[in-house]
Image (cartoon, rainbow over the protein chains, first blue to last red):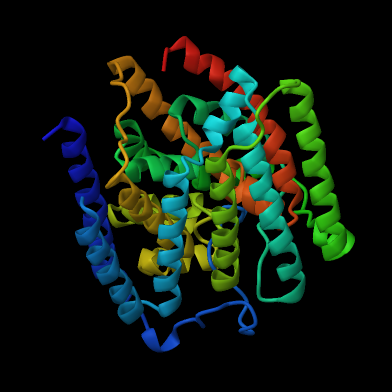
Length: 55
Length: 357
């Protein structure tokens, strides 16, 4: 196994570990309050975070 | 990883998101997979396109990027006028933006990848970009913590071309500015050049379609930087090294709420994960081998990745969040970002050459 492949495994394990840790320690998701599949035309304004936001 | 097991993993992740988070996030993950596959499959690198224009007077990459901007604008600006739920990528013209864009353009050449470039190359398994990604996230987080200081140096309110000129007027202004850009490129490269390459062409079309899907589904344009900064912020909060209540940025209601939610609910996070997955999909059949780097090159590359993350937060986005999403949704900040980042790149390519990357 090459060094690059070993690095790849470490990278993905760290990422998956972070995502699993985050999901288990964050507030539970209220699936009954999920947003509509398509925001356009839904009547609900978008409220997600974006890079262009100053605040 | 082979494609069949990877397809099973992505399918399982899709089902998990649909059942445990929301169907919208599950579908957005697939959009992200498409973005990653398009970026990696077409090797649609913003950084490479600019470098080829400067060093070889090769306009093919920039032509692909301008086509992407034009197609995305043709879709996004009318949609924003039609649906009030959709948000444009409006960043404030500011000292922060000018400094951030310049430094970002410089460092992305050293790191050999912008925000999306670092993501897809990490997904492809390029060692430097895998190392850069966590440092980019850390830099982006620190930039967000310091953002109020940078904004205190001078800013005006975000300017929307749609609000100034209406949707049709904004589209006309955007396409006219893109035409001027191509004339400047034509002047720089001279005659007898090949302008269109199939790889850049299909990449531009695919990315424009996927960026439009992102806007329609999520209600906001495609972004990369916010999600990465959020990841580092969550780790900082969990380790007790950061108190979000004393941060002007992270104490804002929306940001504070996202710190308590799983990152799977964040739009930019979910497309970032998709991009990594899509690039990994492409890597199953494409070689990602690059030349081995020296210790000095590793150190400089990683430092550049950290500064790139920091500056992308100051610049209100990278090539995706500020340039593509800003320009295609009629934000003046995208048009300020572009020349400043290109000016930084003019220095960055020289630094890159100096260290023999």
